[in-house]
Image 1 (cartoon, rainbow, N blue to C red):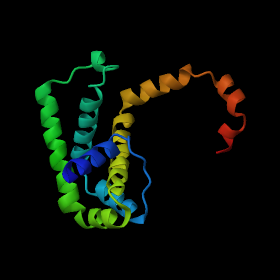
Image 2: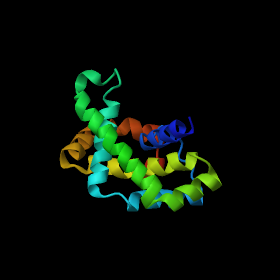
Image 3: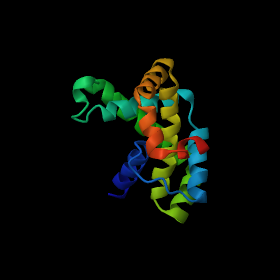
Image 4: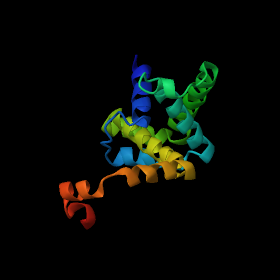
Length: 153
């Protein structure tokens, strides 16, 4: 049961469903997780996130991930998480859990998920779609709603 709770904390952290309230030990863990992942690891993480999110009924009709592909993504991501927590960042993970609880693991993986997602959003085609979204926003309405607060920061 304890292992499934840890796995859930990691998964929720990566998917951004857990609050990112890390203290100094959780911050050290997050830095280690990011430092210890290769570009290939981050691409795997993005694929796993996509393969998981596409299961939601609201988006399931928009994309299909083959069950065998999804199973391979799950296995690969599990090995990545194991390596990070038991080898690459073992000391940081132990200190974070000891001093801040298991939520520090979720917070650390949330940071890693955000870093991996940056890879996704930095793709030129994805960035263009994000720009198109910005083009569709009514800037007058936003300006009226937020006034100078938008331009001061």
